[in-house]
Length: 339
Image (cartoon, rainbow, N blue to C red; front, side):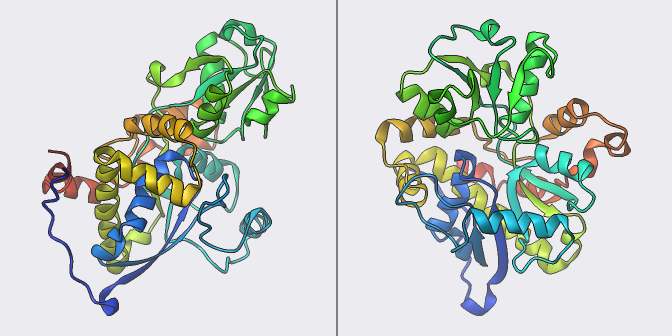
């Protein structure tokens, strides 16, 4: 039984601070935020959260807004073109690594900093076609990923090449938009760098799991709570971020301590009702940080792996502010949920 020592915050509707929150994906690392929403924790801590995220990959999941892939594409086009967005998040939750790289590569990409980090170790799997027996067999073959800046797949592909002593251009063909199990089935790639849901589907279908990258202990700037640089300077925003982190920490504790609730939220919000797949996904999420400090070592690895003249204009501490999470840790708030 989870011992919740923090007192509930009694707030009238007028006292709630409005906050727009966007989840970049529906990975298991986002589930603590969905638990917080589902269980009313944001309101408990004095927030009126408007939550948005991509459409569910499985039928039956909850859509947070009417827009689909077309809207996501046009939002990106408008952002790159410098046009103001009709809906822009106050807090963005996703991989910090791709946000750092986009900040370097793209002229208008916002400078986001992490105020917390949920997932700081690379946890992807390398899944091969049925005729691939080990990682050595992948030399000269095609490796499917989502995108080169993607935390789990792009970063994972580069770390695989580095670990194997391969040239990431000439010794392996890294194929964009090819991380799905369907790409394996259709013979479009020879292996994929798979996040937890795709790993679960591939494992259930009997595809060979060539490597569990979590065993390599590679630090990555993974799923992080991010705000734009300067946003915290406003006192109301600073308090909203504090409340958001409190709700997130309680949601994270519920994930770790109440598996049935986590599976319920996974089914309700993401449509993952297959028990085998849901259990595999949940177990992968057990490695999520209990104390969500920013991914310090992962930020350093990102700066080194994507080294460039522009990247060298920045240091690791340009991409995080751990003031609030340290305050919550020093106060005993985090420990109260994990004793």
